[in-house]
Image (cartoon, rainbow, N blue to C red):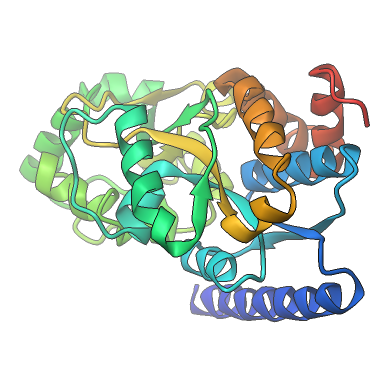
Length: 306
């Protein structure tokens, strides 16, 4: 596992170095290109391709800087001018980028407006959020959930406290340290796996859960694997997890060069639903379609001329 993290760290360094080099090359060759970034997982890679292809179809030169590892890295690339736009989850912006405290009775629009206001002095513009709303979740197999009588996060918390160390969790590393991850769940619900945690990429976490290697898995609500494996998403009965609305974060100077990209991004956002992104994730992860091809098919289906 240590070797895996070292390898991922090296990939992050290489990704950032390549971004800087390509940005420098692009500045020398054509100073008006829009540099489109994304994180490295499927949903983000697809969104990056959708954005890039939509820009190109509108006559805007777009360059591919997709596939970066980690929130801090891609946010640093945006602030440093190495990319011009990427899609970010509002909850991630609030907790990780803005370092804000949890809020009660959040609505998808309230948090978006606060993030938009806070980022304006940084030269970052948030265009309209997509229709889809992703959220973190914890999932169990239907059989295990029924056997233990655990349907809610409160029930999971009660079980872990009365049966310490008996349940295991599969999750990505970031979820173990983020305030909207395990630390917050521990405080809100008393959920504690007492170190019985396996760190892995999210796709493998679902597999580990479905095949009985762990009892609980971190999940994302737009992931097609929830239905595929017939998993039970535990009810967030205290509304702990924020709404992870998704919106493009854009450098203000990029909007000055190409004001029309605001309308393009808003049009994409208005068409992106939970069902649409689930289907796109499925086509890439299960059917083996490339993110670029999945993006092209979706854009054509939505009436974009490519």
